Image (cartoon, rainbow, N blue to C red):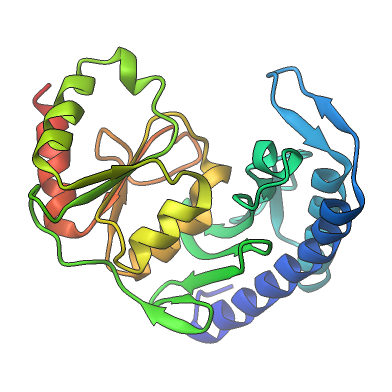
Length: 261
């Protein structure tokens, strides 16, 4: 199957429908309550996670039964050059504590390239999406990253999970970036990706993630004009564990400074 614009538009529409199906499940449990289990990795999981993933897959499989699937709760299923990446509730810790910094993340990868993504933060009220060559969109409006090119009094940096980076020589490089910048925040999860994509912040750094956390967000950022790599400069892939994202010139500067650590 070729990746025509028509196919990508169709697949993106199906992905948005799947995200909406997950929203119905998530909203029910967010309002009515749920039990929380602790997984082997000490992270929480709920019935909402499992049922939302099942709802997403029902929609996607009805349209693409031959595709493969990789979900946060059920792992990888099937073998195909098309792989759907699904995190039904990214930010479950926020979900279980009842604050709205969680989202549903759905992306399509074709032959190791991320080609479309949907980021649905239903309780926060934001829906972002993008497909290769189609621009990035947030709540129906086209969005783009800032023109930031250097660290100065106007630069805003956001951090997600940076525990591993804090034990790395690059931590001091980050400290120098912070000293030269005007604003630092830790928005985290979907939120700082959305903020970066619409030009509200300028650089995003995470050292402890997996591909399911940010696959669709990488597509959205790319289509909004950002460069998205890991902290070593590699393109996002199934083995990614870190993210560095920003407008091209600022990303290049940050990457070079980290590389010199």
